[in-house]
Length: 292
Ligand SMILES: [Fe+2]
Image 1 (cartoon, protein in one colour):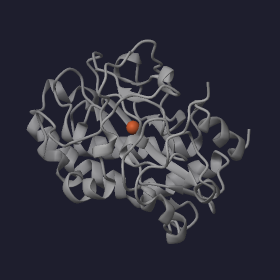
Image 2 (cartoon, rainbow, N blue to C red):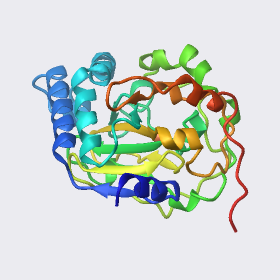
Image 3 (cartoon, protein in one colour):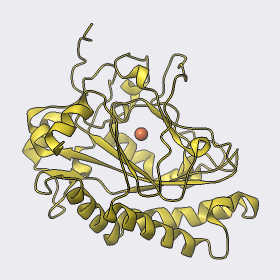
Image 4 (cartoon, rainbow, N blue to C red):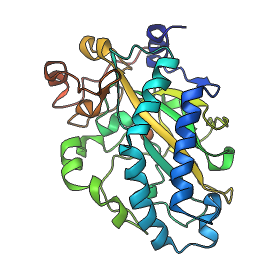
């Protein structure tokens, strides 16, 4: 399947899982080098057994931005996208995040936020956003992320109308490391009980990639494995879809602002042209009538 057909499938709610490809493996290897440098002589999967949580937060507050903004991270993503059949002239990506999900109650706020069920589109992501996710160390179903596909076309009462991406950037993003025990930052959440079952947890190998629409409901699994999960994720949009307003249907997002200015062109790291972004400012696009 080529990239155009794959995007159409993703906008219909399909998930794609790919075996590890060379550049994805290099990106994971690079992340592991940085992790192991940051925690010398400790088992990075068992930090909670010997490292005070405040110290861990201090180290993550250096490690994560280093990975996110490192030129190598961008280079490996550029080649990974090419390997996956994306046109680098038309495909834009945002900087990759390195996520950690610690076991038990060690650390699950702020810099290691354990995400409640959410759609990225509640957080001002465009409906053509595609999420790419890969494990950096071996993982299992107990330290994973979960999809809740039954909500693909089922609206959820949620707090997205209170979320504005520009305001979040101004006020909340940069103080993640201050939130060690609890997280008081206002984030869009479901405002009705969520049925967690059935749910889908994909146990891939290191460097395997899951692609999914940013409109899919997904969450962090409570980590009962005793082992920390490290994963990388980044997001892409295709300029053709940005301009034609293609993407997944909006069934329940009411946030304002857009993340569209965060994406960088695959070929030269240029931002999406202003004229293409302008129509995404303001409120999330009109909610669709649900197909019956
Ligand atoms: Fe997400």
